Image (cartoon, rainbow, N blue to C red):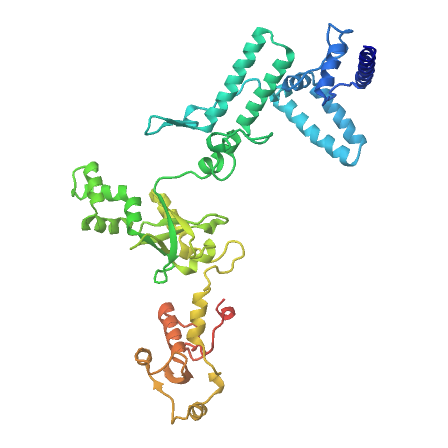
Amino acid sequence: MYADIESRREDAREASVDSVRRLEEVWKRFRELDVKYVENDEQLFRELKDRFGSPYGFGVYFRGGMGAESIRDLLRDLDLKAEALSLRETIKTSKGQKQQRAIKRLKVVTAFITSENKPEWMILEAVPVIPPELRPMVQLDGGRFATSDLNDLYRRVINRNNRLKRLLDLGAPEIIVNNEKRMLQEAVDALFDNGRRGRAVTGPGNRPLKSLSDMLKGKQGRFRQNLLGKRVDYSGRSVIVSGPYLKLHQCGLPKLMALELFKPFIMSRLVERKAVQNIKAAKKYVESMTPEVWDVLEEVIAEHPVLLNRAPTLHRLGIQAFEPVLVEGKAIQVHPLVCHAFNADFDGDQMAVHLPLSAEAQAEARILMLSSNNILSPAHGRPLTTPTQDMVLGVYYLTYSGRDLSATTVEEIAKEQKVKGIKRFQTEEEVEFHLESKQVGLQDTIEYRWHGELILTTPGRVIFNTEIERSLQEAVVIGEAGVHDFINRTLSKREID
């Protein structure tokens, strides 16, 4: 009995000591209070409010609150003009990091003043609800519904808001109301940016729900997907492959893609020809893909340039105009020499095709944007259509010889090869015939008559020089006698550039 009383007295003594210690701590914290003071200990804040902030205690000595409401009250009491004057004075009298911080704050304050916005408007009191089209519900086969994640997040906000309203109407204790306010804040946070604060709200299969910020950010977001990268009519997209037999200003357009792109033009032409009675019949006729449709397509695309674009379009040569040539398959063919301007290669790159519709757009494409009119770079003025990779290798292989033919005689070669003499050719046709019949190789030494002059060269160099002469229809290098100088040396990448 005596021991039990002593134990109770000891417990009461310890409780009173703890109470005094707690009261001293509350009193100490109360003396430290200042405007905009933040108290992280929720229990201590409640005791401060009960003793010094509530009319039921010793009197109202301070006003405090929790959550966004308190921040809104502080912002409402803010005098922007006085704050701006104070910050300007701080900037004049301070240095270093303090001055930089004051400059940043002054920018924000000045923006509020000039735009006539009030700081308390930065605290949301009503949550905007986006249109139903942007958060759809789709009925599935089994009668069930698939809904957007946003609907679940909005439902959480509505349910918690209604529950908070009911608690306030019932006059529930402050601790319960504060807990419900915290849950409502978490629901709103999850709606705006799920997972930013604490654990993300998940749906079926523990998948985090997509919030408003997830719908906006990233490559698949509203800005980059729907606003910056809109899909347009009269356009297509496909993988590019090399088209070495095309001219510089031509591109190979797959037949099926061209048929779809030029469909309105084909239908109009068919009605003009009276091949069909109306547009509806013309559409069916085009879809039948009869030989007449392909003939009309050939007519329509003649002298109708198309625009090719490779993303990313970093300079103006990222979009160029080409004359389309119908090709089989599903890949767009481009001339290898235009790849450098597009920064393209043939390892799976894709290009978009766009159709200029009006006469003005077609004229602009033909005059300003045609690839053969954009040989020089607008940045540095040097040519962009220079041979690369397989073209350089081909030219090198064609013009290669194991010896310096300009410093070698026929006798030396004959002696080296242990023959009486080397083969002599008068025309390019002779050289090609002997190459095809494998009587000579591309890099064998031969004698060839070039504009009356007998020179020591190789069959590969004969083909190379003849092709240049045929393509340019003028001298590559004009000598003093007015005869084309024969390029009789191995051409490397440096010489080609």
